Length: 314
Image (cartoon, rainbow, N blue to C red):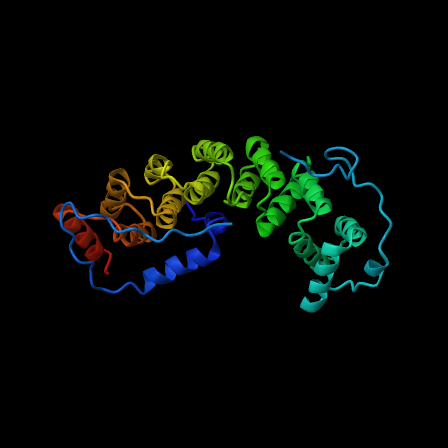
């Protein structure tokens, strides 16, 4: 099955993914020192992350935006994508001028030039104002898949840490029927400091979605589990994902283990199985070998590790 990089790395962060891949490429030929039985395991670095009270600015949930007067500044805007300094001016004005922000939202819905539309979307995705949040909420609840896709993309770019937007995304996780869009909604639900009860509820949703029929949804759910889990409660689900039939899900589980610092005998056993499995892809085996360096290995496990490393030509 073809490996889905955009889905896999969506939420876990491009910087981590690139760093992980680069570290593997420059991994030295020397093996890690052989650990002694009973030695405490090393602790891997943990990657850091980031009630709907949105004002009822529009006429009902999912209703069209109420007509708003066109702001003069928009009439003077260039049709082509503005330069970065002009975009920044638009962003600052949208943050401070509610009338301009409403007109910008209206312009986004009617704009036909792709470059300008992307620029406006970029601006809106960085403005955490009630008008913008209400707009994202309306798009996310739309019956139009294209609008929902735009909403999830903007929410992922915004990385909102607010109860209102988490509420919107949790609703999407419960109701979205398109696997492609569901994976995007999962990626947008980025971890933050939340009440324990809400965190547990999100973890439960992600755990259920980690069993979804679509591998892209499973892989994205596993990645987010690794980021939301601060107690090690998801280690059983990560071990199960390491045995998933889809290579992208197994790879996602390895990344989640590396990010979260999860350590258990079950995870180690599953990783050892991956590196010893002759039918496993070289990419997945390489990632598993790297993560295993952070686990304490007994003499037999170390022998399996070094043999797999040699077979991989490392």
